[in-house]
Length: 247
Image: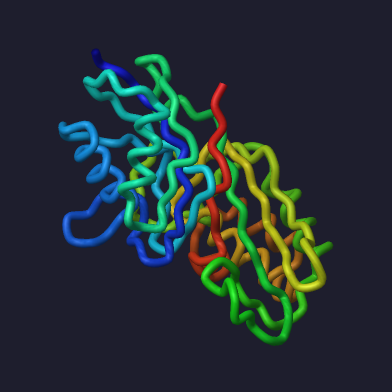
């Protein structure tokens, strides 16, 4: 019998070249497909909710696939986690309707970006946070976050190389929070994201936090629809795909 499965995956992306399968480099999709094909004794092709770049992590990446099998989700989950030799964990496995698709059925995604804002870097956990040694003005950064909420053209924050019909996206939540004296988190939830959009937004928000640009200038960058107006791309290591939401 042919079944459709939904997988919720957590991974450390530090030593991977992103989600998407590549012939000569280690990727999350490639590692998952290899293990699944071995367990199910048939070729398996995963559809991911979206691509994450090299070095980007995930707590809640979602993928789906169809396979002819009588295996139940619990057994499949245990088999994948037992055989997986990479820093990849299958958090959940469920049967879903045949028309479910990890990417096209998603209604929103949420990313978190972590910043260590103090003079000295960290020794533990440095692969999961961006060290910014100069103090950041959180109030100014949140004023800029207010500007990106709603439906806008985010072409100024897109890197080339990603096929898309439109650069317009709707952002439901965008804010900077303080986790403790040293650590900040940028949370953003939207109906979709352009290539490097979150990292480019983060780099520009840090410029605002350092008073290199004002909130009004940030608004002009957004409306300018020109990547050269925005700040530098933030490092991949601070970015985590936190969850993908479905109806």
